[in-house]
Image (cartoon, rainbow, N blue to C red; front, side, top):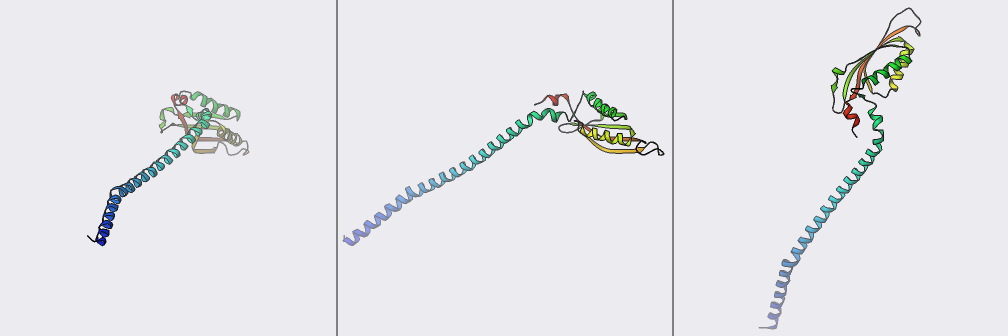
Length: 187
């Protein structure tokens, strides 16, 4: 065998061995490195999502803790079923303060259920002068109870007197939000 041929066979053998090493060792290693890189990337994304959820949960808990002391204030905006007398007494007090004759129709039996509360129809009929009625409405607005008025009707009781002292009849219709006594106690 000639030296030239031996060199060619040697170069061919080295090329084949290098190719086998590349194919059997380096290519699978590169594929494995890519898989690991993708897994690390996916894990990083998952950790970022969990971190953001943790931050959101932390913020939610902080917000809840800030709102917790205001629970009584929020609950006081509702009529507590079974304690309607407190609501009626509040209405009677402001009618008395404004020297109005008042008739209250609180229709507990006609309440409409909502998700978190009930709506109880209420009709207030007032008699007095216009200024007293306006003062009553201002006082009604300041009450802790949330009353959603659906109609307001003011009519003159007599036509021939001075407008500041003439009597008016006012009919207020609406709904008051109510909750059961069990929801009042929940934390």
